[in-house]
Image 1 (cartoon, helix red, strand yellow):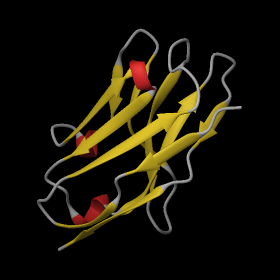
Image 2: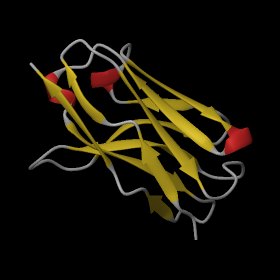
Image 3: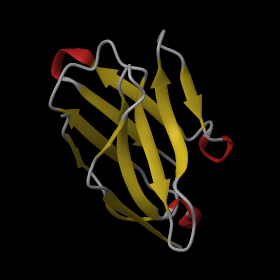
Image 4: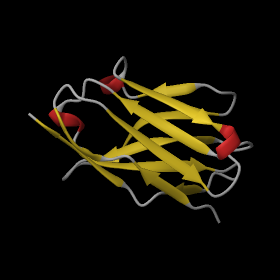
Length: 116
């Protein structure tokens, strides 16, 4: 069992920045992927950014150049730096870890609200 604890959400004006953190209860080595998804009201959950095995990163097209994912394996934490935020970035952001068996763990979610 893996627990993921997120923090860093909040309310920000358009053009502002936020940094999300997600700390896992186990090592983030030897996993398939770790990263961030989001779900806006009435929409499906979508990938925002993640690390995959081998250290590759995937970003949603809508956040490329504005968001950056990073990690600190020493403390099992992954970060999402969000700059130039837009109202359409408003969503609940979820941390996700996929283990080597393909099982997905999710955090409780953190609300990000961007006002225009």
